[in-house]
Length: 106
Image 1 (cartoon, rainbow, N blue to C red):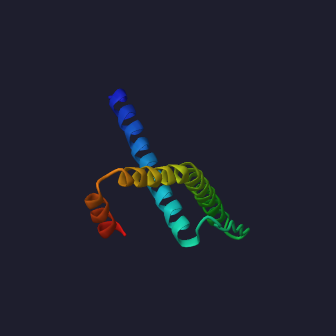
Image 2 (cartoon, rainbow, N blue to C red):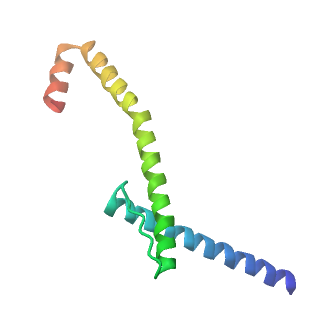
C-alpha cells in the first residue's frame, strides 16, 4: 500500500508542477503581449507575493524577448538569402513563367 500511495503522491506532484508551468507560461505570454519586452518590475512591500510573481513573470518575459531577438538575428539573413535564391531562379526561367510570377506576386 505504501508504494501505491508514494507513486500517487509523485504523480500528483508532477501534475501540479505541470499545471503551475502551464499557468506560468500563460502569464509570461500575456505579459509579453500586453507590455512587450519592456516589462516593468514593480516591487511593493505591502504585497510581497504579488511582487514575487511579477518578478518571476518579468524574468520570463525578458527571456522570451531575448530569444525572439536572437531568433530574428539568425533568421534575417536566411530570409534575405531565400529572396535572392527565388529571384535567381525566376530570372533563369522562361519569359512566360516570369510574367506569370510577376502578375501573381508583384
